[in-house]
Image (cartoon, rainbow, N blue to C red):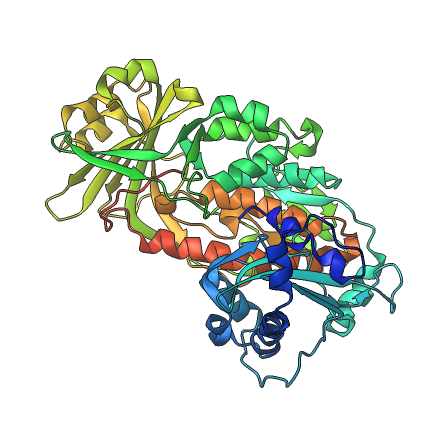
Amino acid sequence: MDQGGIGKRLETSVGSLGYPATRDRDPSIGTEMTDQTALERNKQLVRNFYRRVFDGQNADVVKDFVTEGYVQHGAHVPPGRAGLEGFVRMIFPDGPVPEPAEMRNPPTLMIAEGDMVVISAYFPQPDAERPGETYDYYVFDAFRIEDGKLAEHWSSINKVAPPVKPDSVPESLRKRNTTSQYKNIAVVGAGIGGLATAVRLQREGFDIDIYEQASELRELGAAVGLRPRTAKILESWGLKDRYTPCTSRVGNIFSLDGRTGASMGEIVIPSETDDPDENWSDMIHRADLHNLLSSEIPHEHIHLSHKCIRVTDLGDHVELAFSDGRTATAGAVVGADGIHSRIRPLIMQTDAVFSGLQGHRGTLPFEKVKDLLPEKLPCNWLLMNPDGVLSLFIVLPYAGGEYVAFDAVLPAKEAVSESWRNTTTRDELIGRLAGFEPRVQEIVRRFDQDEVLALGMYDRDPISVWTKNRITLLGDAAHPMLPTEGQGANMAIQDAQILGDCLSGATPDQFPLALQHYAELRIPITREFQRKSRDKRPFDSELPPLLTM
């Protein structure tokens, strides 16, 4: 449902608030609104939902109140009944607790109209500019009810940190942070996640400095598929005009038998939402995306040859130390330094887990290989090995179809380096593709370079903590995942968007709470994609996946 629909559903509510009703109102609406029993029942459903789920801290009763396809308009809670259940378990790890007889925080306003209920609650907030005092804060939520359950939800806290009760703010934070004058934010890492973070936070008016250990800005790899949510984020950042020419929009995968080249049918990319038209990905070369983002950041704010070796939280600010002896200070630090993050161990350490797969990537002009490709792209060849494990070779268009990227995902007998600088020779890769039909080997043979990117595919176990006071993680530093869901770059850019939402309007004193809120919003979503990426071995499914990194 279009979010704008809520306005249409509530346009009659002015009459119930003492304003004259419009003369041309549909008489059927008037009939519906006379059913006070149904309206009171809807109100009671919402009251009990808050009382039992949130006051009772009980994820197990969510099913009694919401539909399976529960729609959330806002990124701070995952969609669906399962998403809400996971969110409740995350914020109330020690629940359930005894339910109160009435809502602990009674609503200040509650309106029922047709199948809609709007509720408001009062949460006085600690005032960072006047320690010990509070200011008035009201939260509004709207629900659409369907067959006696909550089917759709809109919230007024999509763009800000959630309200907190004054006594829930740690005294140490209130005292320590009231004098912070460090308004700048440091980003460690100039990959896609780090650059996206800088672009997003610049739009909120923050002074951003990026610290990158490499001596030049350079992105390796091949094509990456950006889903509708991510594409809309880039558009909201004003990048559409330069983004679109670099992409090729794809909506299916044409599958071929790896040995014979015979067609195995087409697989439609599933939609992210209830909109069936959003079953696409925009294919873009990683380097093009990297250049697009970096061009938005003033060059004097990108500090190359800065290898961060230590980050020290000093209470009201953070100090960064670099390998050459230089230091820098900031009000907050975002660790976006990838799967090998040096910031992550400061918060929580986990070991890399090898998947048993190795990816080989390259790009070519379409004209150079068009005689070898099927009519429809993207396409992949699937080959069953004697040991029952499948190998995959996929070709993806990008840059408006002027170029294609290939990705050969093959089983590896032993662990191989996960470095983006790890390579193999073109001839060695051709040899490893010996079981495929001749077209596959010929595509690689026409690759211009002697070396082909070849990296081991690793992930790490999900971590439950991303933020420690003024330090947080983002992208692969927070949630490294296998490419089997094609979500690595998508999650990093979406992380950046939500981080900007949470920091919007925040003072330096509020950075720790805003960073904590960001982590609470993103952890359940990214954890689920980490799990899916690990569980969905690309060769265990009957449906070949879109493999992008």
